[in-house]
Length: 482
Ligand code: FAD
Ligand code: 2HG
Ligand code: ZN
Image 1: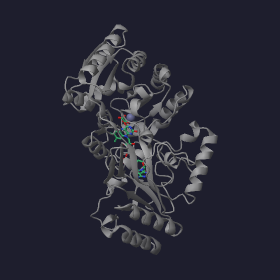
Image 2 (image 1 turned 180 degrees about the vertical axis):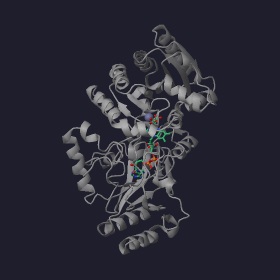
Image 3 (image 1 turned 90 degrees about the vertical axis):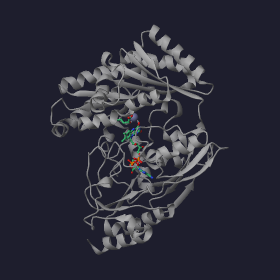
Image 4 (image 1 turned 135 degrees about the vertical axis):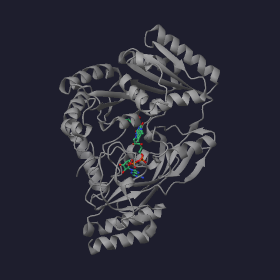
């Protein structure tokens, strides 16, 4: 270790306390939880894992790294719960990056009932925000399967979507203000709870979805909505993707703003839950290519919600969109149905390494996209297994690929990942879609993005990155290369 790197580590210890700077110097310390992504697509090596306890400590760490960057080559990878789908929050193999993990900054700072807002530190786990909101009679409507471990800072960093976007929008739509440490180590306090503020460039929305490349989010003010009087869940069998799209139109028409969830799940994807998680009893999937999970939220009463739902299901059956269906009779039943949906990513991981796509397509074009892209993939790589599911209500599909049964998945990915990505992304482009709807770019798609995004937009992105982070200190090599 060079003298300047030792000096850097010493300064970082004085910023946050020696016990919060973890390094490989102590052979007993295992850093893999911070160095490896959960999908095991990458295992890097950190110079140190630094765990600040306050905004001031984050600012001191960033300022120190900025000052010593030229001498040490250090850069910073912000990290929350490390649940990124795109290798966005782990260090590379250089041994020169520090992981700045915000999990110690996990406090709810304020709940303003009159303004329907909640302010939390960035390392607060999403479920903690949901629970705090509920305890005060509100709903914090960001919901995703990683909610027990992902943090609001990571949700903002990726502009996460999840299962309630059809009604409440992505994380960006739920955020009113941010506190941010800039790449120079300055603190910008933008924690306003204002719903309107037109005083220049929208810095909040620029930082959201920047994947840690423009600064470190240290706290956020988030919107709350009234807790519905009732929420009901239905699980339906649908005969085709065309019918699933028609059912979505019907659901919007019948339920209006009451439609809060519309998730589609393919038969093979559901079979993986049945295979790997036999305790979850997956309904209806064996006899149908697609199932759709619907949720209605009602501000009047459960009886009103049930009547609306019954009207929708009857119309769906009459029009041939639904061939079978169940409405959960209790909260426990509803939770069990949602659990099946939320278990899909884990069931797919249990089946082995895989290629994930997180795409969006205009909803009306999804059936044709799936038919033509399925055919192109099957032609190029016979035997591959399609693990399709996603947020159909938002036009967002997880159009995932598993190696053929019995194949060595790692070898399959090495040989074919580029082919698979090219077929899918070319098709997405032909259908007017996006190669990332909610997971972001991270490392996995950084070299793909230039092929599918306008050069003008990429130039503007690079200009922003260079202006805010001229020395490329923050999460280099993610989102856009400069
Ligand atoms: P991390 O993984 O730690 O970081 C994610 C990115 O944000 C990285 O680029 C990181 O550098 C940056 N970042 C983290 N904290 C900060 C900060 N304080 N300031 C600035 N940048 C920061 N995503 C969806 O959109 N929808 C889903 O439905 C969904 N479901 C998931 C289900 C499972 C089982 C899993 C494992 C993941 C899922 N994800 C989903 C992916 C993931 O994006 C989300 O889990 C979450 O938004 C990431 O939060 P995190 O705290 O783990 O962030
Ligand atoms: C979800 O919707 C997540 O469950 C993960 O976005 C998607 O595992 C996936 O591909
Ligand atoms: Zn998703």
